[in-house]
Amino acid sequence: MDSIQIPPIDFRLIAPLLVVTTWAMVLLLVDVFAIPANRKKLTGYLAIAGLVVAGLVAIPLWDVSGSTFSNMVVLDRYSLILTWIFLIIGALTITMALDYLPRHGIEQGEFYPLIMFAVAGMILMAQGTDLIVLFLGVELLSITLYILTGFAYPRLTSEEAAMKYLVLGAFAAGFFIYGIALTYGAVGTTNLALIAERLADPAAETNQLLLLAGASLILITFAFKVALVPFHMWTPDVYEGSPTPVAAFMSVGTKGASFAALLRILVTALPALEPFWLPVLGMLAALTMIIGNLGALSQTNVKRMLAYSSVGHAGYILLSIMVVSERGAQAFLFYTLAYTLTNLGAFAVVIALEQRSNATWSLDDFTGLYKRQPLLALAMAVFMFSLAGVPPTAGFMAKFYVFTTAYEGGLGWLVLIGVLTSALAVFFYLRVVIRMFMHEPQGELEPTLDRGLSADIAIAGGLTLLFGIVPAPIIFLVERSLVAAGG
Amino acid sequence: MVPTTFYVLLSAALFTIGVLGVLIRRNAIVVFMSVELMLNAANLALVAYARERLAVDGQVLVFFVITVAAAEVAVGLALLVAIFKSKRTADIDEVSMLRG
Image 1 (cartoon, rainbow over the protein chains, first blue to last red):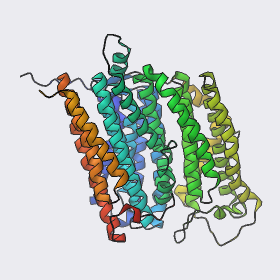
Image 2 (image 1 turned 135 degrees about the vertical axis):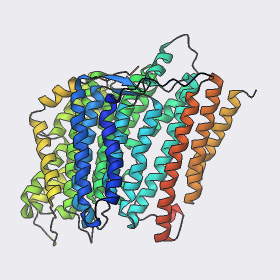
Image 3 (image 1 turned 120 degrees about the vertical axis):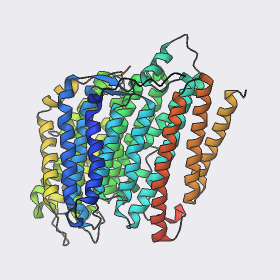
Image 4 (image 1 turned 90 degrees about the horizontal axis):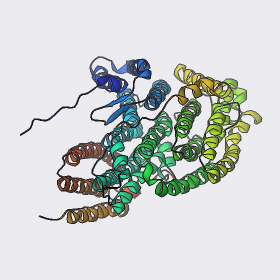
């Protein structure tokens, strides 16, 4: 009987992930035993500190790359930039929530470590090069989000949203694992690089039918997670029901991480199947761009409008994913960063306008906002312009980047749909802006701007403008981030 | 020795039953059970393929799936208890305040 061989493990390569996970676990205990019930904000500050530390730990890893844990986890610049984006998402979400939770009477210390666990799951999805690891990352993120969605318990909408999300998420998990099982049956491995190797090997006999079934199931799972039409039905309900900071986190976090994993699967494992998945994803992208933006048109609830807009944006991101090239990965990173900042900012403004007693998130809340809070209205205008893709904002640069990349990658007809739907989208984003600036204020709505929210909006708005005007440094960064195969 | 195909066919049947259960049944507990059936169908396929190839990685994956499924069900049941406390029902269709 041979003893089990433990493969050499390089903990350096997963240092940010280790920091976030350990910190979150310790913080859970600290929160229970050391932090009094009326000082739970302290937990939030500690969580932000943990995310910052993880971000700093990641800096010296810029010049390191390699894979460890038997090639199950890889560190490359692609995953490193995504790690930073995810840490930013986590930190901004927590800042948003610091005063939101007590204001709505749902403050509990676990919220902050849970966000950290979700971030850990996202980092794992960016670094995983094995279907097992990707499955674990997806589930760590999803299960945490089920809890966070229902965090406003016993508010019924929150419970309902959590239930819907859980049933659909578990359903998707079933598809994912069955897809993995079939792929494993077809090629005999779950490692992404090895899958590509077996597929390229003409001597190896692979059962094409099994492989196609497995790959389709995996694609469906990710379509669920990033809310591609026709798998998007849960999005508006879940966003509306969940606490607003959680909706903000989901809209950027789940999408970013799932697309990151999808890109790695397509680039590393399934380039041989491109004739199969390219038309499928093309159809999904076209449908998503059209239906997402059309759906947003008719919404009078800002939270639902942002949900549909996030569906539409998933379509644009998918364009960059489908160009399986370095340029595609770069465009994806840039778009994710721009979309992250913009959308988190927009949600922060929604939180500022959210009243505890009567949260309807109606468009009317924005009427005449400029007269009451000029700065807040200006910030919201920046976010709306950025989401619509109007210069000089990060959203414009990102869309430009994605569309040119997709056009060069031979996806001309999709770019055409993308440009047309963007023009359509300008209508409903501008509707918010017009209400803020052109109408007289009505009603007694007083925006609540606490310190965390102000900081959030300032950071997000500032960076959105900055990356729109001087995108060069970010482009410099993403152009140096290759997707390593990890084999 | 039973051929691997038989196991895979059985697992495909179980998976289909699970999918139909999630789509058709309205009681949340039955829906959870159906999801569980889907996951276990995948487990069966994984173990069958692993035995066919005399490899362990498929079997190891099964342990991960079991763990994840347990976590998922724990959260799901907690949620169900919360909903039951406020709505006095476990029927998914009765819990629908949100449009869509």
